[in-house]
Amino acid sequence: MVRASQPAALPELTVNHVEFYVADALQQAAQFAAEYGFDPFATSGELGGHSDHFSIALRQGGIVLVVTEPRSADHPAHSYVSAHGDGVADIALRTTDARAAFGRAVEGGARPLTPPAQPDGSPGGLTAAIHGFGDVRHTFVQAPDRVGDKIFLPGFPDTAELAPHAGAGLLDIDHFAVCLHPGTIDAAVTFYESALGFRLVFEEQIGVGTQAMRSRVVQNESRTVTLTLIEPDPTSDPGQIDAFLDSHRGEGVQHIAFRTDDVVGTVSTLGERGVRFLRTPDSYYDLLGKRLTPTGHTTEDLRRLHVLADEDHGGQLFQIFTQSTHPRRTFFLEIIERLGANTFGSSNIKALYEAVEAERVKTGILS
Image 1 (cartoon, rainbow, N blue to C red):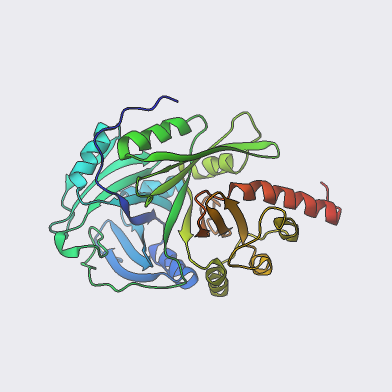
Image 2: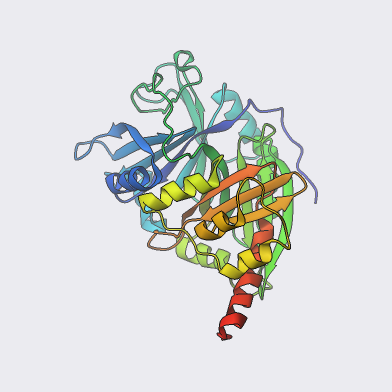
């Protein structure tokens, strides 16, 4: 594959926050707080007032989420929610120099959305935005010097003195899973390489029965921002990626993976809070010992909580996916713990498929 030439190196990027466009900000914030242990800490716009939006910011560990509800047809959240329902609209990237990051991204092929400017109510700060994929943008966020390394959200009250919030044990964002139209994944990889200086760190073709998909993982140099790009194989039967593209009406973020350092403890806590997870057949754990011996957790704990396990040359990982509560089933969350592993649990797709088949044989349900 021919790679586009890259512009000069970008300033370091980290995830500043993730903004969701939603129909009901209070309801979505309440769910993140009650079920996932996020702490609401600031609002922007007016609830029932004259602003064109109402936003609530929440945090846990190093994760900052913003849920924004449109109050006017002129706000971009209105058309987004009309087309896609609730979903991720902005993966905002913090940098020490938003102007340089924007300029070099545009030089590398990014489509500019908003030029560098000081956000309202944030003297000394600077933001700029480029198009990412689908209706998702990347906003470069440069915090004022007074904020330092603390939380900074453009347009929100000063939040520099906030203490860390432990919540349910969620630490940071491990990766974003992005569904793309068939035949576009190579162009997306090239875009992130040339516009944002990311590297292609992993790729594979995944086949499950008569379905198949291609996956490419791009990551910045310091591994603080990771996107798992996925496209369906058009020569195979339609599968879950095709279903996402149809229901979401285009490309978008299918799920966000939150990292923990104790998947058993975190999943237990989330389950007690009411989070529902996908269930794994017992036969998966009957076959698990043929693939690996879990480190740090017992197979029985994994079985009890339906947590999946995988292993690569670097170590092991444990992961579980939530049941989607989205009306269109186009968004869910992943909880992941890494013990040295750098990949994304692709063996679990094949192992789960085999486990389901074994369960069908055992129960005699073969149709």
